[in-house]
Length: 291
Length: 131
Image (cartoon, rainbow over all chains, first blue to last red; front, side, top):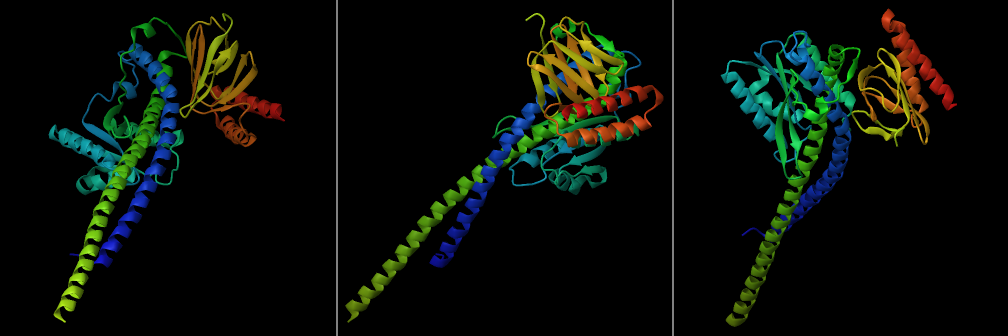
């Protein structure tokens, strides 16, 4: 049986751990609300953008002069996977679920003889993927100094990706991030950004016939790069909310576990203390009897 | 009301404005246009400039850099990559933009020079209005 002093120290240390995890949980809760608001605020823009581009793509898409960002390069040999993860750990399975999805995708693509390139956003995903796929990494975006992800960050990442596309470094690009479902559930998601894909426009949208100024092609040409930035931006926001949600529930679990551990240790501590007292009593009584 | 239409201005980060307006002046890529209720549906790209909106609560102006506009008979939606509300914007923001615009006007190709210079003029005007 461990001695009393050790037990006491142990209890104290678990108690301070609980304080830390509790604090982290509350910070994550506050940040989550902000991240959710940001994701909410970005939605109207993204939706409009998608709707207009969807309509344009439907009318221009099949012609020969369709922009490369929409029509693709005509091959799907080289895939660029843009992996978005958190800059920090202690958020449960948040980073691992994305990395797991990416790994299975890489294995799948390589099995089909495709070339895979990786661009990581966020330190944690890079650390996990570096072990096995260091030779596939083509770049890394560090957002650890960015307090609040803004559109400028997304535009920068998009610029990087588009420059690589223009240089012919890849044929297909997809982004990987967690979609925020609720605090306890974040869904790892894959979205193809180049060539752009759109849901078929709804029938009632098609009934409005727009005039396009300058021309449909010119507008589409102008919008597609922006669409890439928009998709990356909403993925970043979604990921931010997911990260805080995941951290919140992970820290909630940790706090609860620490509480349980404290209870268990306290019982053990009390038992040992009682045992010590009983032992002393027995010694005193047997000593008195011996006289 | 028949002589009003819905005006929305959204940027990637937030919805900047959403109210009823009677007319909206838009700096389109192919020249300025003014949308009023009943305008035929148009989608046009924006050049950097000032969007002026007339509404029941008075006139408002917004500085937008790039993006596009969707006009229908009953609504105008400005989807701008960067936008500042004219009455909320700080002078510093505008001054920064003005610097950028001047640089752009100086280096612009001949066919874009007019637009860029107009944007500079618009910004100067807006700055003067604020004083």
